[in-house]
Amino acid sequence: MKFTEQDLDFAQADGITLQGTLYRPAVTDGADLPVLIDIHGGVWSSLHRKAGRYYCRELASRGLCVFAIDFRQGPEFKHPTASSDVAAAVRFIRSTDALRLKPSSVNLIGSSSGGHLALLVALNPDIAAHSTTPINTGADYKMATDISARVDRVIGLWPVSNPIARYQYVLARLHEAPQSWTNFAPDRLAAGQRAYFGDTRTMEAASIQHLLTTGAFSHLPPLLIVQPELDQNVPVFMSQTLLGGYELAGGLVQYHEYPGVAHGFAHAEGLQTDACINDVIAFIRST
Image (cartoon, rainbow, N blue to C red):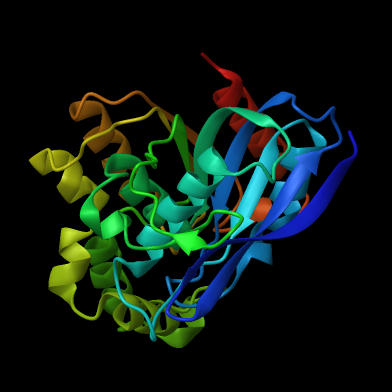
């Protein structure tokens, strides 16, 4: 299926205009289509909305609408700035006419640290901390607290769901010989987390597992966890704790592990990438 790509301004804060790229299937205007808001990774302090371009384009070519967004990052901006920007993107999609279609559902998909941000907003969409970013109304930028940022489903692609556990893990890996770090940079990961969260207490409070265990959430949409078997950035056991925590909290969750691939595998063509994209589509279209 053919699709188009269009850059849209969706929010503005601190003098920064935040943009998203809309990957829209070539269907009749006014069609009901699911919309996925894509939140990129980059340790909360690097990369941009084009990082997931490969899977965004694949999803659009198969009939889903994807809105991949930029957001404020560390070290200039601190938690929870980024998750407020993600919530603003949800409100923008729910309110704008720029899509020229009626979203049949609004969903979040995030990779790595972006998966953490997607989960934060999915669990607590309308808290004060997630309602500080003015959205583009077409005429100006204004707060839109009257529009809920609730989503229908959330997808975590190799999500860093527990920032404090991941921080402790990468600090431990720093004691290993660098030659054991094949395609893995614990020093960069540790620095990126400090740049956005500032301290370990904030990392702990932002842990999705902590929110689930303490009941500090207002919404628990169905979750799909995508976990690469050979992931060193987010080892399998970290995503398994998310799976267990979500189930114990009463949420509906699917866990798919993909053999023989590492962190970020769906950013490039491959058999497991194709399987992952098909799983995402089936999840979004499920009732």
